[in-house]
Image 1 (cartoon, rainbow, N blue to C red):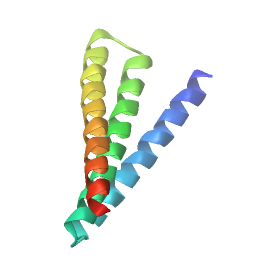
Image 2: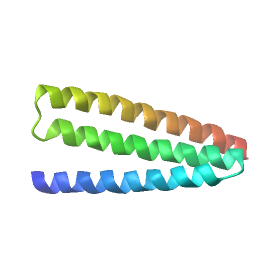
Image 3: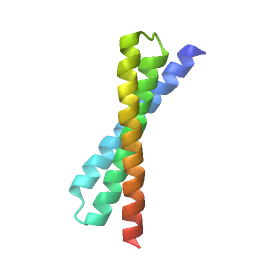
Length: 97
């Protein structure tokens, strides 16, 4: 059960990291500022998901006090990235209309 959960977390981390890189490349190549902002917001959301699941991997499995502290830092940064991405996405999507 624990190994299956770890594998699922690793898959989520890898997939969200690849999607984050994809949106990063697309946003840097986009000329329209509104579309660029939407793509960058999606990248922030995916990066936040990546950091949150990395934090879960670090903290939940074989957790020592140092690992829990590092995981807590990743968790806070991940939630901040996710929140900033959602905020920017709502801003740029309202601008698009």
